[in-house]
Amino acid sequence: MAKFCTKCGKPLKDGKPCDCEKKIKEEPVSNNLGENIIDIFKNIFIKPFDTIKRYANKDNTKLALILSGINILVFGLFIYFFISSFAKGIVNAINNISSSLSMFTSTSVTESINVPFFEFFITGIITMAIFLLALSLMTKLFAGVIFKNKKTVKEYLVLYGITSPINTITTLIAIIFSFISYKLSLIVILIGTVMYFVSISQSLLDIYKVNKERFPYIVAFILTTAYIITIVALVIVLGILIYNQNAALYY
Image 1 (cartoon, rainbow, N blue to C red):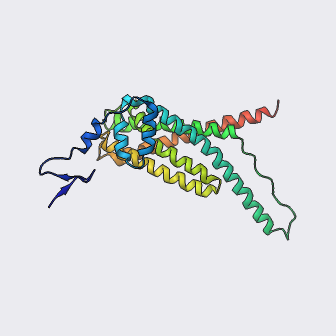
Image 2: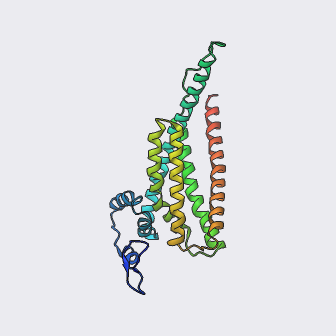
């Protein structure tokens, strides 16, 4: 009975592994950042693990930082449009309730809530930047220091940067859906987040060779601590923005 490669489906010769992964590794990467960015965005959903494997090395640090930067900016836009959509949904809900109770009261909320662009855009940017940095630092702490993986923080940053177009594309879709409903937007961003974490989890196992026996503990610790750090930072950022906004009212 013929055996086939689980990666590419090519028939295997007895006793010989498939050479498809070797070919992927040997395939040259262009020095043109623009071409590489287009290639990653084009193939990240078609051939996600092959694409990540091809680019996830410390030689592509600049490329990974650019991709992370794009992801951070898009997430900043998402926060603004999502909050705007959410505020509009709340106002509509209040108006509907008010209309239903119009026989008892003449009061109606008709004005929309003004959502400041700058504050929420900057909040989104800072949040995503802190999250990616926390993710890399916590991966180094739990996968590297505690469970003896030899990769550096820089290499983890590269991995998360190369994988970030998954987040970027789904976040852009979520922004489009925010014009329809904040609920649809939230569903899309959750789907994108799951896809992103599945991709980086598989990459940590297959590419960065993280300890398989300890992997569930590693992922749990990484995500928990990264989210705690991000939430604490977000509360501090929002506190500063609110304080500055209130302080400006007295001048």
